[in-house]
Every structure is written in structure tokens, then in C-alpha cells.
Length: 88
Image (cartoon, rainbow, N blue to C red; front, side, top):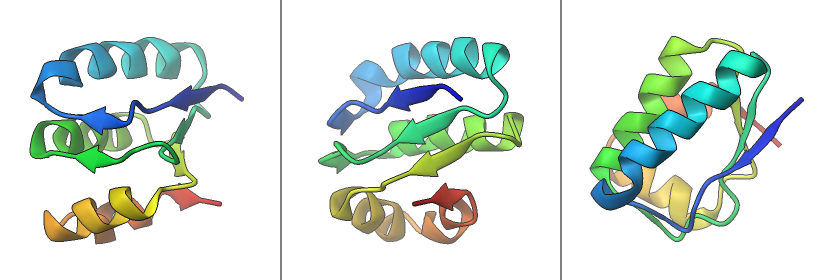
């Protein structure tokens, strides 16, 4: 199992890099775990990248979502979709 640590800020500036890295890791390990414990700010582009990865790779999961991550995802109306793939 591979663990991918999300950066503290998921915004437009970092989204392309995160998307590329998630694809690379998920191709190598279909059971990829995405650690969201360090996320302080989640913006729409970052959430879109994450949702795309979750839909494209059904075996990956989000672990340890920070309070800021959960709040931002909920504010964007996306938490229910992400929560289905969260493991603690």
C-alpha cells in the first residue's frame, strides 16, 4: 500500500502536479491511500483533481482528512461523494 501525502494547500497552482502524481502512484498501486491530514486549504481545482482520481481509480481512498479538508469539501458540496471513500 502506497501513502500519498496531500500538500497543505490544494489550489490551482498545485493541482496539475497533484493530478500527475496521483495518476503515477495509482497506476503503480491500485490501493493507493491519499493522506489528507495536512490539508489546511482545499480550493475547487484541488477538489476536482481529487474527485477525478477517486472516480478514475476505484481502489484508492482518502485517509485522515483534516477538519479544514472536511469543512472545505462540505462547503463545496462535495463531502458526501468524498466521504464514501474515506478510511480512518
